[in-house]
Length: 71
Image (cartoon, rainbow, N blue to C red; front, side):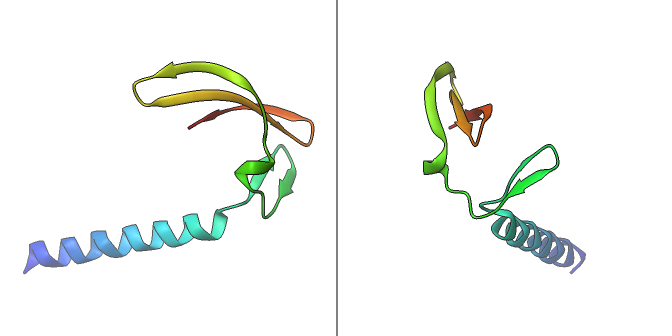
């Protein structure tokens, strides 16, 4: 029974984290500015910075900010 309660609690924690991710989706923070409802398509592509076993890192920009994105 104890094992089942731990499993149930873990599932609840995961559900809460997933819900928070859904709420935060589309929010982009740079310094003290927050942009809402941002789509990945809005990031201007500037090329590949590197590639590895876990993905590709690209250089992108949005509203004057330049950053790396792992995809």
